[in-house]
Length: 316
Ligand SMILES: NC(=O)c1ccc[n+]([C@@H]2O[C@H](COP(=O)([O-])OP(=O)(O)OC[C@H]3O[C@@H](n4cnc5c(N)ncnc54)[C@H](OP(=O)(O)O)[C@@H]3O)[C@@H](O)[C@H]2O)c1
Image (cartoon, rainbow, N blue to C red; front, side, top):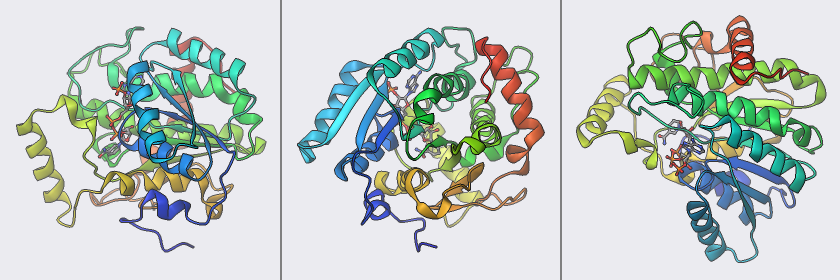
């Protein structure tokens, strides 16, 4: 096992690793952890595809990677996860442009926004963080099946401790909306999706990993006022007196590790934090994964619901 932990950075994870030529598709690739993951992987020769919903932001992201590494192989693709049409169009474009994808990192996310809806009428956090990625993964599966690594990394969060996924009312049609409850439920869904993928695709050599990156100051907090941010930090430090912010390279390290580490090959369907596989823990607020997020029955129910919402089967 590696000595990696809380303060390990992306570059440290990849040190000495040959990832040249690997094709890595990263959603939310224009900002924060996605951009840093793309930068670090491109620096070691990977072929990076940054997906995002705004071409100008994607161009800026590519320029920032190329300014550090003029030889970087970085492409962009438009994908608005809040629109099933956009996700399908992205899938079709990707299948026309690429022969295979080695690693898919479902990294994009929205946190604690006011009650809003996606283009298809799903509650924004559930719709973007889970449903959009569910359909995108289905769209890209033919390419992942032809890839060498066949890994899928789903960004979750310790926020999944807030609540199980509410599969009876995922879009808050009958439940009072709470931005953190919604975020927590969507991040539980990211882990259940990981379990569902592993269950259906492991026998094809495709493995899925969920990740909590840590607490990192990125654009994710854009929907919070200063008072709300301060209240969040207070809450987090009360729960975990040892809490400290990670830098962006430290925050992106666990997803980079989950995407590449040889020691977890074939061991998918798990939740990782601080560059290791977390234990099940239904009590601690300092770490670990809740058992409801790894429950196969919940994962199957979410899978069936997601198929119904996107109107398509997604099975092996
Ligand atoms: N930062 C943390 O402390 C932390 C902790 C736990 C988990 N996470 C998870 O880590 C992941 C990355 O977050 P981050 O901290 O890097 O935040 P970030 O800097 O805000 O990046 C989020 C990315 O998601 C994209 N995105 C949002 N809505 C989208 C949509 N409808 N379609 C396509 N892309 C969309 C954003 O694109 P735009 O720029 O166009 O909005 C941005 O590229 C998220 O899944 C988050 O839940 C972060």
